Image (cartoon, rainbow, N blue to C red; front, side):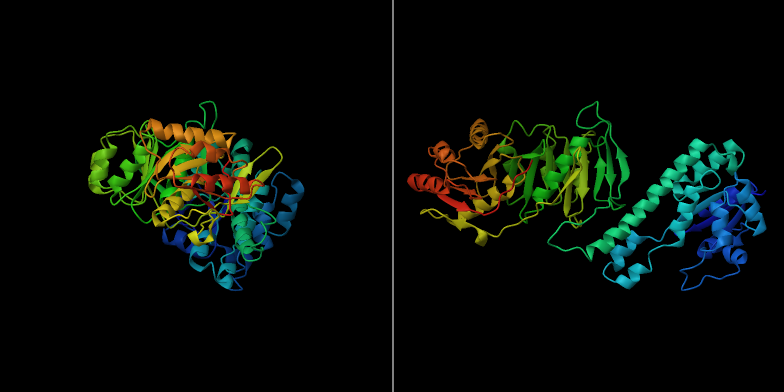
Length: 513
């Protein structure tokens, strides 16, 4: 029985080379529509699907391969005599390989995602059906979809001598990849339809993740843990310009850096250590902003991740090169900055896009299931805050409160920060007691030689007692911003009034575990 393959692809990269390789090995090719045109144009003989089925593509091309003479050839198990007998009775020729990839639904969503009818026509039916059929019947018919795998298929073919002789363990691997590909495709479509039907008041009734491995890492948080990056699509979000490969921990810190600086229009710089901001500054220039960030904690920033919200200049690069840093992430780097920083070959430089459509949900895997929550993207206007004390903040105070409240939500709970209008002055992160977080923030600011006089304190959650006010009463800070909502709020307010501090309630907390 001569071997035949069935080819129907939207992504035609490498298809001419594959067709030529199969043809030169004596394998017959059956193809549909534009795929047949492309193979024929390359000079390779091809049998068109319609010459087998006796039907042209009908219903605006919705039906081309959906026919017993095609699917019988894909699903017929050549190891079963009863299948062979039936296939012979109906003149069905077995296919040894199906090569198929689908309409690009992801690209269609970007272009026509708001037009339902156009999107419906981008839902592939015949392609997934053929590939799934081949994957099911992998003992007789191999499934193949990825142009990058075409050379591997030809190599496996040469080693085995024929498509039918490719070993079972390899056939199972081809099948697993094909089912993963069809699952990813169906997940995209399900997500598209779900977005238009689920209530905005509730989380979705089901979640379909479609993730592809895009990078292996040397290890995870620790050297004994394996790790990799899986992405939802092919969009290039961060582009690495130089340096060593990114680590698991680098990715988490880079995410935090980018999120923080994009909150500002003025030149801004942040320094991240262990997912917490250990330095932040605003300035008239980028260099001024970076030096302000360094001043928050001139010891801990060593080996940190630095983020900017504007193109890195040559002037800033001259300052950056003086320190040991792990990564720098920014929208872009000037040619002069790249020339300067290229001399530090291990330093990772990354560009990011500021127009990314973020996923709305965060997921955390547990033994009992997956916790899902909306991402904390809450932005409060100053008008939403309530001053609950006799003392009121001035305009400069409001700028400091805004900076502190924006930063404290990026610090691990229990979180406390001291801030001025243009920089972070002290950070207390991840303590079991809010009092301990305040102590740490005060100690860190003193070690950095910073004066907290005239600053504000921001807390990610309410004060259960007035003890925090007692801790800061001798620092000459101006006031406090916190969510409020404690049963002892009145005690805390009275303590602030007694010390001449203003205090604002936001009505919203920002736990970050």
